Length: 94
Image (cartoon, rainbow, N blue to C red; front, side):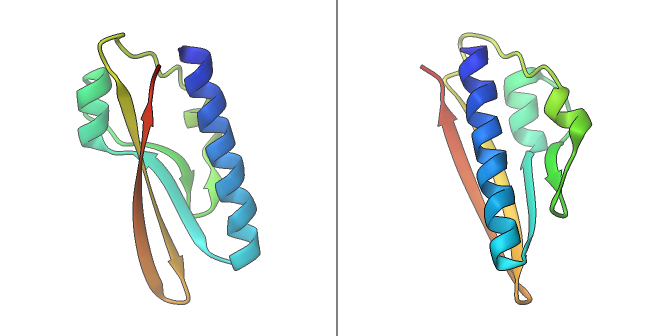
């Protein structure tokens, strides 16, 4: 399950970075404070991409969750042509 989460996260980051360069937008990919509290009990936001740049420290962070957690919620927002858009992706663990 941990390997699957790492692979899925890597694919999401690669796709967002690829599309970021195509549309010249600013992308942030993160796990919100509320989600970090729910899954790990930590009161912090975990940023994977900040202002279009990969946070290499966060990518190396071992995100180990309890087996009772059925999904992890990733959030991202972007700004294209002075318009903001926010999205949430639930990654279900099987």
